[in-house]
Image (spheres, rainbow, N blue to C red):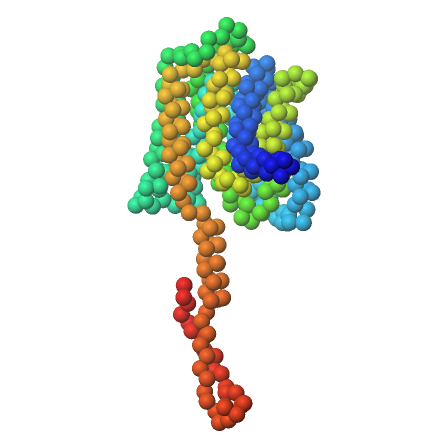
Length: 388
């Protein structure tokens, strides 16, 4: 009976390890969906998005910095001037430009629309990667064509969401709303501007990924780089907020939605999210993580309809469907790309086998007295040809 219990325990552990990446990435999408809802509520209650960005990076720096100091204390490279300048630009692209554009765009549109717009991020990043030669395309191969076609479909979906609003589609009828009238007025008056700001936010985020990839090549310390970006983002956001927010009362936070939004976005979406993504990417690869991003849009739409009483428009639904379809086409094409590291490893292994399996030919020259116990001289010749 004891052996059967041990066997059942082993089987259960194996199954849990198998589904652990799925649970982790799904929980992460719920975490991002919660960010959209909580941030939307805090903005509707009058919190400044400039102040929110500052407090978010205060929380993120406090969470990430201790791990970076402890875990990378022996492997952290020296911080040179070129690296510092790149970190300065990285902090401007994502913590300052991306997040402030995103918060205003979400305030002018809706949390559901904002989460749907983020789905064009892989396509924009792919285009920039082609420009900077970080990505290659061979139109003779199906997966390369899929990446191009998927990018075109994704951008088309974003254009539909931008240019066509359409009638209101009510999936869930709710009578209780939080600032219902304010949401409708804001949506009607600022929808186009909010959409442009969201697209600008996505472009800033995509540029951040490209520059981050280049920076990691000369500063290969992920946690330390993240902590430095959060710290520099805190400094830059504080400078921008002090200029834009002259009223010091905007900096006041209590035990309300403002404090919750700052703590939640910093700890969950800038702290825990990095760790979960790193673990899942290490085990299943980045394609696995990317393929779950549309789930966040679905969760946000459901929560937005229930909690914020948001109304979806036909243009947003059509554009979201195109974005999801194009996104999965790009992801499928990327999944067929052979990893560069795998190629290098195969080459190294092949070269190693060639060195280990070189045939040795022994040619014995007879000398007088060989049969009397005097052994001949062996000429060892190494063939240049490998069995591989």
